[in-house]
Length: 305
Ligand SMILES: [Zn+2]
Image 1 (cartoon, rainbow, N blue to C red):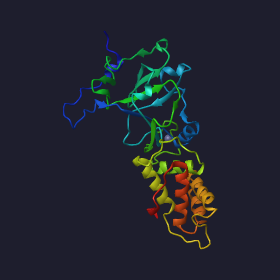
Image 2: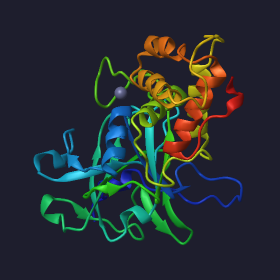
Image 3: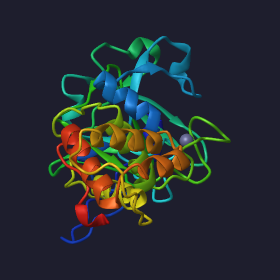
Image 4: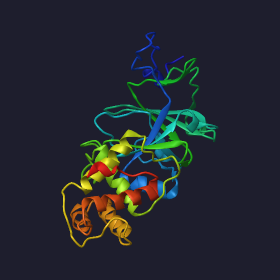
């Protein structure tokens, strides 16, 4: 039988050393949907990752099929998909859906794509894929799910995906020059995980968008890093406005949210002007902490000042 195209990037052999994994055979336990800051805010407003039509070079672009995108890959030089990652456990995410091999999309880094659907998609030319039998970049072994970590794996789900208890948000760097939305002029281009995360959290808190329980947690290091970065930015220089707003005053929550709103809009000069309405950095930070705790259940440390 002719070699299937997925056999060009098979999962390798498991390492027999206990403290080593072969890069072409790594455990497959998690994957994520990564997106830009504005898209992530929309996901939180909706409570779900909405599936959409396929626009790139995929063979599925000719069909009115709507998918949500995920990948287990982590890009050390930054992601071209944005700063916010919604992480899900594998294989829980694909429960009750059938796997189909879609394609290997050639490019600088070839993408290996699977579709998961509740509908039989063989009529679109897709091939049912069995990870315990087929030798592609994803396999089911005695040890569990594994993947070829040397290649790009893309997972398309033919349904909307709710964000909540089963998912966890983290921040990643946006790549310095590649972006999946805009070749030039992406507002998030080259934003670090901390800076992008700080803008995102400021926007969320200022608009009082409450995330589902457990989605945004401060025991996630990138969330904690973004929160501390935000606090450090807000109180970078000392000031004293003798008759300014004090922590705990009636006006403190509104002015704190105005500062966060300006920061979330990246109007950093406005944020600098507005923060001077507070008497001291300590007063500002205490008010910001209260707003963050009301929205997220946690805030930055007061010792950021
Ligand atoms: Zn971008």
